[in-house]
Length: 139
Image (tube, rainbow, N blue to C red):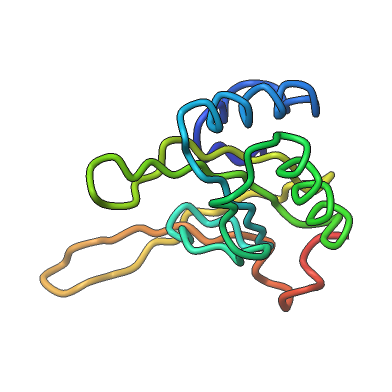
């Protein structure tokens, strides 16, 4: 199952050249970038682990791609995403966010049913990957 989160999620994975083009677009718009990673890509898990600090001072796409590749090397079996932030409205908003690396096998999710009060039924999703402890979920 292919996880679809963020901008470009329904497109095939980007090459490094295509990622660089998106980095250049963000830098031309003065959007700082950050790199994040996780082994729990649940749709409600919006707070992934940060790889270093946001890159407010970088103006060269090569420096950003260097950080992306360093994160990829350190976590070869994790999801890695690139975020761009737009602060023009006086608050930090996400201009775009997309996955730049994913594990070779993505086990997916199952739907879990829960009986609630007053005969109501609720549903939630459970990631198969989270059945294993962190650090052992992929590969």
